[in-house]
Image 1 (cartoon, rainbow, N blue to C red):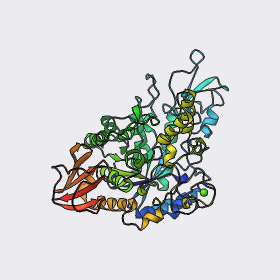
Image 2: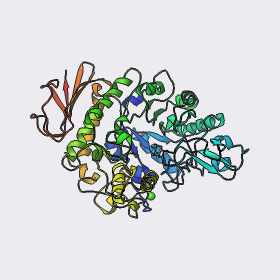
Image 3: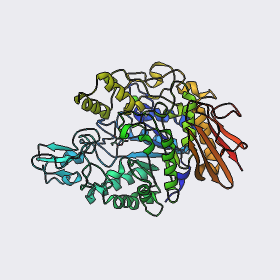
Image 4: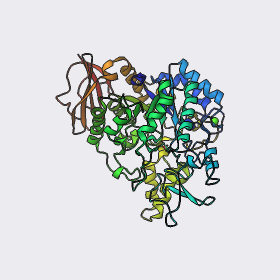
Length: 534
Ligand code: GLC
Ligand code: CA
């Protein structure tokens, strides 16, 4: 398997909200092309582009109607090639989003499939007869309601783990698997470097389970087949979006000898601050657990895999709002979180705007939301009659995916410099939180990230060194990274109070990174330090 992932630093772009260059209110590929020098300046060397394929947009592009094209609102295939070329000439690799658990219901395969029971595409999807005149089983969809939709034309139900406009593909059908392998080869032949694989552990279903979900019996077989037919010949990098795995299960998907995926995301720490992981049900953050979980994954994957370090993406509210102190210590807590997570062993993933330490935008009414998950959840919760509208809005503000989806704030001009037209979703550019302001401010989150990535690149202990958690008590944690006789110590104060430096942290050594100017009197609120010792 290709090893370049060990040096990768990935920047996720959500094209709809990056930069609009033609005034239609929707970000576009030209906007990304225009910002390539900015992207390069962050110190990242890989971009993951969220879907930019043709799509009716029921789930912002995660419902694809043509796997081989570019959505007209984003540009043309020619522009896509220009973007790819522009990245490669700057030493940046491109990962596309591979959404193959489901297609759009407007994909031609599904349009055909639903026509008749004997249509050649019928078995591209999962159709079942009604059971006692009802849904085939009790599975529910991620965006609410049953995971089964009845189709009048043929009198059967089709499965959709997400919205009913996202029918699940039938991976048991070898023709489907061949189509997907061919499509992957089409993009890799064009020069794309790999894929982020959307909800990939769902492709094999386990129908013996009472609840909807993946990790079915043929998951490994299906992935290995893709590996052999498409990924391995191109040395492509893959990172699987896999919710709810144990480290052992992740190893089984990514271990060197498996020939399946390169890496998987782990999101266990992102379930914290939510009662039972329910994003609309807040509870206080367990900071000790946050660090313990990260350490558990570092340990669990060390033998035979490489972790992914992530705290934001297009499905999550902003890390500063979730885990930091937005009111009193926005700079300190945003940079502490970065120093804590990205000092660890693994591939850093950051999401557009995270480099500015953005907080969640303020949504004043339901009309300001666009996300299907949010709108459905609001309706479902409202129907229970348990909450007032005000309480429901507070819930949405806490957990909505739209918190991370408002456009990049480039400057303090109209709409944050994102568009000259009417943006598809509200914009929010707060003073101090724009690229233009942070660019030349040495004490900005933006320049902290640049420094951090520079250090990771140059110090082998930070790249692939061994990880060891030494201390995690009373909101203070200390860990080390060691390689080639050099140890880097990381200490983080995960609180708004002053704390004593734990004894295990060395008093000497060279300061590599510090989110305060002080040389001593550690630890201040949300202070983070990286120190190098021989
Ligand atoms: C993944 C995507 C999310 C999407 C879902 C269905 O979780 O990240 O945005 O809604 O899959 O494709
Ligand atoms: Ca546009």
